[in-house]
View (cartoon, rainbow, N blue to C red):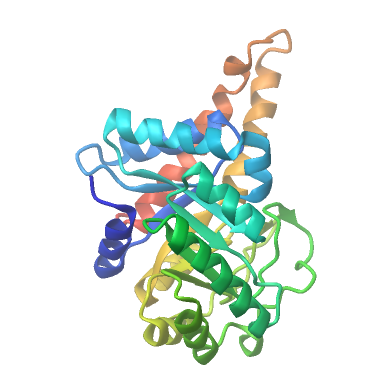
Length: 293
């Protein structure tokens, strides 16, 4: 099977994006795998499963890795797992020991110098102890919680003056040696309840891509318009993170499952609408990111 690094390079060349979807339970994992497997069966659309620190604490880092790798091996399917938004060297070590395919060190709240130093330390540790693991770094704060928003997260900014700058991005990549880079280009974690998220800064994505020359990752994809996704992929985005959208689908599905029969106590029956709702969103995103929709 092709490695994740090869698959990302192919997506970069083909001007498409790989979907990255987070999980907190088995329903989410099943939704991601089944949506990808059934999307274009002969093509075997690659997909990345993400677990943040909070999600890893709930699911279990080792358990999440074992589950994803079991699907990959049993079905010979390109499904991979990423340790999303890892904020400390201690948690980096935990992800390395668990066997994650990719790890992002998130020092985006730190000033540039401190972010570079901390990311470099994390990258050096990963290179030494898990040389095949893909390393991602992030520059520019976009909030930290995948939830329905009423206001812009404190500290997150979306005007062009505060977006990640191409010269700082280049310095960050050169000094840390990361394989993937995630900028702040109008994106944010979470999504607004009754309005689209801020527009992405497509020209800035192009500038950053031209400067760093490595694959770019767009975090905070939930709430972004389809047209912005298409433009961002053309501009150089190779991986797109979706979490809040499928969390919302999970929650609505729970309500549907409970409403269908208040006497039902079998979890897998109550959760069926959640599975169906999540699969629908993931399938639509895979189509868009693949250039089919």
